[in-house]
Amino acid sequence: MVRQRGRQLDAQARQRTVKRVLLVTLGLNLLVMGIKAAIGLATGSLSLVADALHSLTDGANNVLGLWVSRYSSPHPDRDHPYGHQKFEALGALGIAAFLGVACFEILQGAIERLIVPGKGIRVTGVEMALLVVVLLINVLVAVYERREGKRVDSPLLIADAYHTMSDIWVTLAVLAGLLGVWLFKWQWLDVALSFPVAGMVAYSGWQVLRQNLPWLVDESAIAPEAIYTLVMTVPGVINVHDIASRGLVGRQCFVEMHLVVSAPDVETAHQITEEIEDRLEAQFAPVRVMIHVEPPSYVSPHISYEEEEEEEEERRRKREEGLGTSI
Image (cartoon, rainbow, N blue to C red; front, top):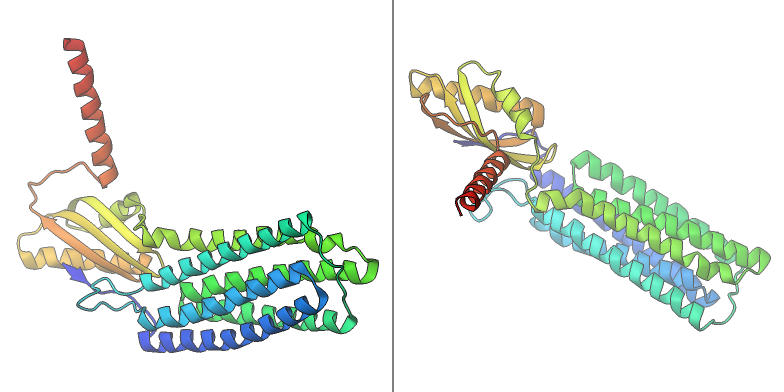
């Protein structure tokens, strides 16, 4: 028996919000990229050109996000009975890939500059002021996108906000380097700061991967023991076993279980499963629950599949030991 549960924002309204946020941030990211690229070419700053490349990935991420948000939806249909939310997770992985490319390009440029030094960097007060404006725009974009992403529960917007946060740290590092060049003529500082910039970018990519891989690989969302404890408190439940869950708590969870109940008829058994679903919904919403009801005579000691695998491995080991002894 499967029931759709959950208290979510209207899917269409949510998608409109995601689209609006992505369009706004796309425009601002393109503006930021243009300013950085122009100043980087004018000054000859390696770190600033790398930063402009990083901002280019911001814009590409927004375009990717617009495509993904068009097709992602929590509601099932004939072809996607479990909804379309993994499209957002796939989009987030695309952002992580862009971050990896940006990190590689920054490191490559820094190493090339160490091997073959370029011309000296020339920086003016006007260019420094423009970079401060760019920094403020990045802060605005990150705060706005993260706030809206949490409000509508969009992993895509939250992941993109992480990317923009990395852009803030990159821009701060570049500003520090150019300030040293401008005030103290420390030409080496521009190359030296390119390496920690690459580290910041790589860390942002790891954060995005860490948050979305569990959803894509169907990692257990809720500990089987937690579900077992909750279900066993429902009157009429004799045993629950073969518990499985996937998804992410707070975004969308799917729970499956086999249930043994003490019920004189189907209607009573149905009422017990309804109570279980209500309790799971109250604690882990939104959640969809599938319950397979078995007769009272059925007995199983397995809470989850891991226990079955461990016991099977133990039986196999004993058989092998017994065979070795007989030989």
